[in-house]
Length: 267
Image (tube, rainbow, N blue to C red; front, side, top):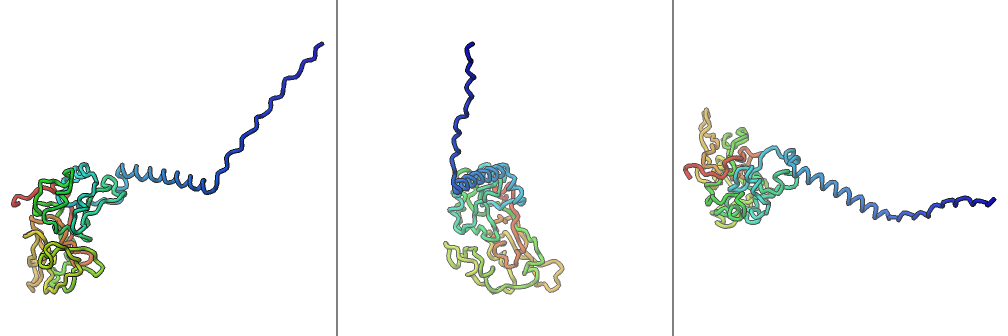
């Protein structure tokens, strides 16, 4: 009888030890993954407009010549040319948290109004897409918004009071053009001092003739109180809001969302 050899017992191949990573490499990898995840989430939310809706339920005040809001956001390429040419740096670009409006230009009138220091509305001329319509060629045709006396109890004129000193506090950074001071160069608002028996800064500094006027307050027995009345000529530039010495401002600008670029019949 021929002896049979047992089959060979299989042996395990030697396993390769996993490459060791340094703590620094691991930390860098985690940082990259977190950044990618956070970036994708924020950009995705911004593109969907969720962040913008949550952060800003109120409409923005757009630069002079802005077409209707939906068309404006569709046409604006966020190039920033309007920002570059604004002589008072009134125009800002919306940040990431604006959703659909991310990168679109806007104005905060209380911080810095559009005082038409450029005269020829340079932001409109600089816009390459028509988001700021080129059909406008003078400031009287602009329709950014409309002024409203939202806090009549704070209005100094309605109280029959005057104003002395600068229109705003010493730390205010806004600028304005006073033609009697410098025809071409806006100066800090805090550099201009007033001595008014009755405050009329909203009327006095309005760059549009006939846009706002002071009228007697109904039922005022003394006959000394006045209140600002906004006229059809108002373009919503925001100078009245910026120059109002009350804090917060008695008069503010409500942005126009529709027909903001159309001139009124008298223009």
